[in-house]
Image (cartoon, rainbow, N blue to C red; front, side, top):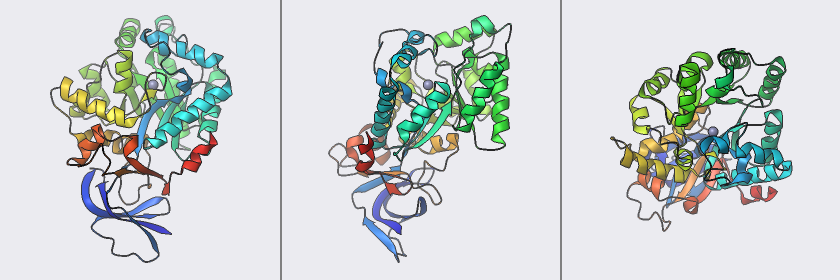
Length: 413
Ligand SMILES: [Zn+2]
């Protein structure tokens, strides 16, 4: 049976245009039509009255590491590398010493928390090889969130030590990468500093080969801190972006917080997506991404909340933070609408999925916001209201694949 939402307000299409009184028809898991005024053809359709409701696209959290959900705020005053380095960071020690069922339970809590805050898609960089992917697969079971799993082998070079000899990835690790790609959606590589030129090349070739058979994404961290950027220049004579662009050619890079203008322009020119994580960067004290500049240079930008250990997986907070820092720190303020696109439309484009906007043919993934909520009413500017007034409290319901997210779904905890 089709569903008609009548008398709703909504942010329509890829431009998130505000319609004060409109309708939407949902057929199975997809949006069939979106329009102004009442729906003309109501035959054989369930009609829902939507007065007082603003429908917006579901949020796409384009970069998470939910595997460290058990380590919330541990080592908050430690330095960047000692917290999250994939080999010798506190995070890695905690994960290695914790029982699997505890890790999985806390991962599940993070996912439920995200769904309650309107996140319908998450793209997770999953450490731990095959074992790590099995954990997240267990954590998402029974939950309707769409989870894009980007795995990686447990193998890291150190560019300061290995650059000159330029070793390749050992054959057993190559084999494990193929096994990872059999059960994941692609690879989420740690960074250029954990790779030689040869290993970056090999990752690219493997992804190109697999992409001939199935959709496969390639993402990598880049230019997160001044230290990682300095390490790259000292060891290789090149920036992280320069090495990534020439050797790896990923679908998207995460951060670019400390990238030079030249590097940001290069990423824009090569049409590589950028996923920014400003609150996680701020928590670690590594800087704030130059978001206005990235936009001016033509980058396609999405937003991620990064490690649960260092930041809450809350896109409302991310939007609020971005809106305010760009108005304060950068020359050109970014419109609320552009920022909201980063949390919805742009995330869908970078991840290559049929989600992120309310238009015909898209997956019916959306958030129902109560316009009469105490924090929001009266809503004079919908885009701005969502950015810095809305929260989980103002959500009436969330829909994923045409189905309302049910509280029963969360009883699997
Ligand atoms: Zn990350």
